[in-house]
Length: 410
Image (cartoon, rainbow, N blue to C red; front, top):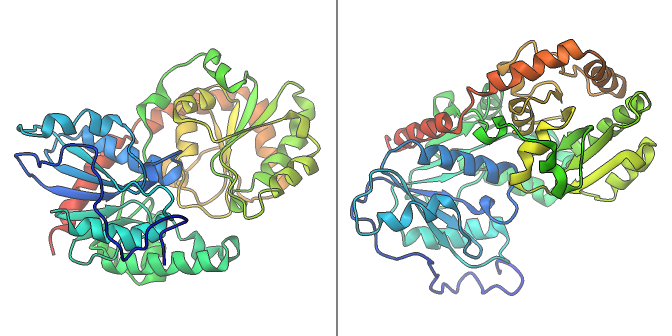
């Protein structure tokens, strides 16, 4: 079996290349390995979550050494370009981040994690390993932590091809048994992990998501020029999956579009539908296709302005663990129309733009109320940034470090 097209057989373990100096910092500190390949390329949910956590750790000040394992080619990032060089051969007062690039970009992520990464771990003197998403490399010698964001593959089996569904189930169940600490985004997901996987509740901790400070920063509509956009528009953002009900968003937009002739719907996110052409069908069926703008994946640097200058954003899902988009939207001062049973239920119990049912009349009614009732909309625009200001990656990073310490206590 091989890792991917053109890859060497996994039994053939060749020397891997590090792009940074190979000598260790003089003060070894605590060494935390991180399964970090989700940060490569064009990171979305899990990759952005991990980057936020590590930025929070970087601000935390503990002189730990974080070893980040990537499957692909080297790339630069402030986390290691600003901390690793100064740590070599001198005392370090804060955390350092050391990337290890395996230079196997064609490797399939899960096969690389399960079969190649243990080889790399064997060569590193680590104290603990952290995986930000569902699975762990089979290396039981190391204490481990794993984040399980949701159990969509258990609740929505038809949303996944058979082999992918079985793989996710197998790896998630094994990971929560192997890990000393299991992290969840919300109390609801923590309860699901406990019930479905029979994990002792004492082993599970809730580590809430956070919002980067740049989403609170002001911007002008000129920042949208590289995207070819200008207000007014509604924003549907996030990786496009069937459970996220973009079909309902399009239908609701079509129902209110006649009242707002200048308003457009902007769709931002990579199309990951099992049948990608379904998106074309939804847009055509809505009858408002000429007012729909499709951006595809949007680079991180454009996201704050994209949120800030929208009239509203959407985050509707049949099932979701939490999700960064509604938090980032509210931090930017833009109301988010959300579905039931999201983490926002805990953060803002009386939030006014929550759809109690994922049905076309309900979503259209909430959207129409948001657009017509300026007093309520302005109240949410003011309160959103204040409420989201408490959700910092610094706090999340501090909680992660506390969980690492707990994982080291048998």
